[in-house]
Length: 295
Image 1 (cartoon, rainbow, N blue to C red):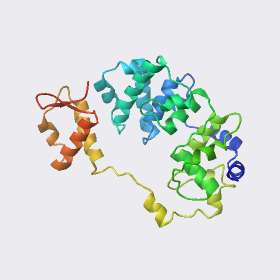
Image 2: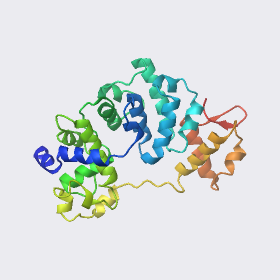
Image 3: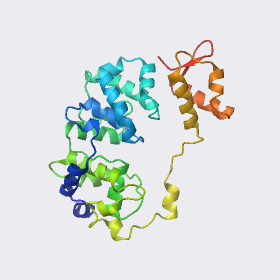
């Protein structure tokens, strides 16, 4: 029943046509992008707006155009190049991933989902996104945008929660031909039109068939709002970690504790953030007690 309803509500041809007209000109979508470039874009774009990712991605692909090039790069250079994209552990995982590609795949990105899932830092979404967008394999690609479009258009609910059945449900939508372009279109629709806040329903190609619109665009229930987690940044350990990382990236050499001490007024929180960076391998303390990026 779900498959039948989904195919009526979300017509692949309509999504693909919309995508061809409205797709953003992202650098990794251009002709000639390698599977490594696609993998980089997917990891960089996790929880980060693509407008921030695009210039950094272009710098990385120019500087480290292959897994072998990144695997050979000094870790401190990789972390400096990551800049302010956030969640810098992703940069470490990318370097580990590159090394794994060199060691286990002769420096190439594999095309099958199972092999991709065995790479460091690659999860369910990223493995399928690389297989789909780099190699044209017709597998379901489910991110927050796809999940939101599907939940609203088919289920008629305002908030989407991850579910085990969603891969099978999205797979049921895929056309026999042109699946990767349809998958990209579904993601783009969620990013540009079916947004979490103030969706532009009047411009949506699913307007006439969307179950959520048919139900009057109901608001989330109190229970759904409690379940929905909103990530904060200001005043959190993430912000403090970011300040310390910025100081380490910009320093010409190891910095003393006194340089870090002035970055944040709460000494307990500052110390906690610093030592989580040490635990994560994002910072190193030398024999003098100075701090620097790993090398």
